[in-house]
Image (cartoon, rainbow, N blue to C red; front, side, top):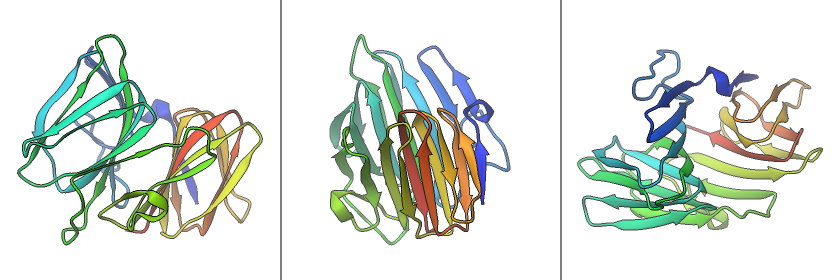
Length: 234
């Protein structure tokens, strides 16, 4: 079953220094029916103004996956770790209780545009504090993150697989799903999401969709498409 959630239906914020779209409840935006989806707790699409920063804050034990679409960001934690990530990179922070984290747009001229995911982390698992990987710009498919770091992907503390797809208009790709639930997200471009029984939804730029109880999903690009398939086994 596929249930779409349009970009227009998402929560929104405009603070001047930050424009954001919230797929699930976050900050001032609250919907008791949208507190996350399986282990996917947050999916935010945010633009930070030049030189803007999120001040240090603590998090629950989650893996924070930042997909940098434009600009360059700096990340620092209270244990002295620091890293930078630029457009075309995916950065994973394995947050810890009691540790604070900050983020800053390092450019004085260019906005920082990114997608941020929070994934609940298994309490017993510990991974490297910071990991990064390139989102291969010209490849039609990249496994960005997985529980075991397969194919050179980022290693998550949860049974989740994050797939990154790039398709041209008319192209299609089918992915097998390991979990009972998955989330689709258009980064840009429109597509048809199709299930083996012939069901489907048509989604526009920025739209997402809940997937339930499907063994596979096929994405057929209506325009040049960049999208995520987040396979949620937990």
